[in-house]
Image (tube, rainbow, N blue to C red; front, side):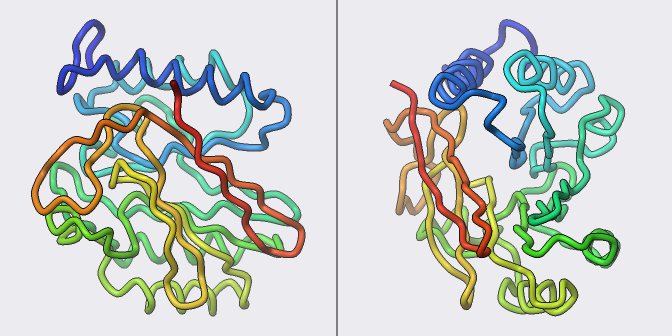
Length: 235
């Protein structure tokens, strides 16, 4: 939000700072290879707010950052704020960014241009394993008010990415749902991450907040292509 403003009675700047402090008290920033900010980075999607978000993160972590646009975000404002939005590549793993958002609309949208961008990112890397990162969920989370906006045809999408990457796709992570999700699309594990602010109530039929604390997840991307995941919450 804008400086000094709250959202649903939550100081989202304070909770973001608490999450970052908690995470990097547990593991030194020097031992973390990258950070994924999985979308809905601003409820007030203007350049100033994105700059504040980027500055806060940068105060705690100076490594590679992948920012994904969510349905509350405005792509042009994110670009104007110069947020890093490109896939991250190492010799063994690639964090593949896929834009699933449309400005000011909750429903997912993966355009042909989005698919082409993902394809080009895969073509130009020699990493042995690929982790897909997107905002919208690839699976139903048993919340009808959220499930209506999930990615359409997730298995087709994953199969296509697996083929384009020459059989190197290993899984996917997403945001949007404000809760801990561990599921699968075909043979691929997919993980939804808790929010750094308020949480949505699991299995709710309409919008409802949960009492769970803000959280985050650690992803250990292993040499054999497997993904070890741990969810943490602040006290």
